[in-house]
Length: 312
Image 1 (spheres, helix red, strand yellow):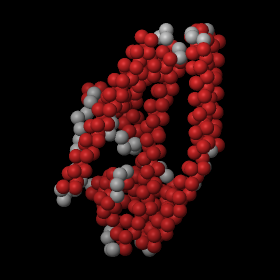
Image 2 (cartoon, rainbow, N blue to C red):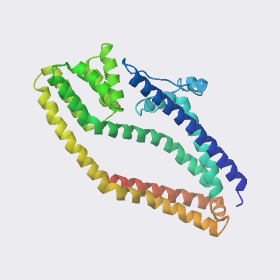
Image 3 (cartoon, helix red, strand yellow):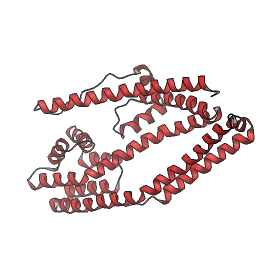
Image 4 (cartoon, one colour):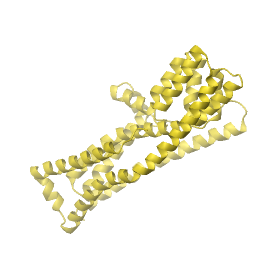
């Protein structure tokens, strides 16, 4: 291969990135394990074991900028144990790895396109994590409403019921409810605390639950009956969402497979005629054609995902 040195540098850089990510995952897992051991061996409240933060200087300077504040807000709703500085360094390292590896396999121009796609992918990753966390929370809503209904039926106040639910439920529901309990402890109203929860994890199911709890706290009424009925409804919606996701899985795989086939053809052409992609992207018309082709693939992918999106 003509670009063997460049490929070697790219693979080395990717190995370093994976090593850093591995160390981060290991430290996060170790912190979670220590927190679990502390929780099981101690009868007090749950304690959070921290970890040594990396890139503190960069993180401190980045938080003072507009982009750093936006990154911090996005990370806050994903539940990731990352600082804006760590996220920025990981994204930059990933972009460099994409540029070197894709540029060595295909052509230098494709490395630039891959880096630009990776820049969009970094933001898409945070959005995906937020959606993933929201879906996990939605799946816990039936259990949450059941706990609240049992607690209120036993005569506990709604604030106390929320605190008890935060202790009994796993994350992400437990973590989010602990935030609500902490806000209530420092004087926030129930409306404001639950409203911020709905803003962090936007979903129709959560809006219905928050509305039910707020109206019950304001006007009174049969909150236990409302929560029981809501539990049954959420269970049915959970099963429906699972069935819809199963039916649409083939369409989503197809949407991803079509652009992958195009990349496979490019790799096949380059292997059959070494240097063909370099010659193609060496001219302006070749670069424009490549950009248009990838844009059409992106439009097709987004169109398929849009048409297969069903709101339940």
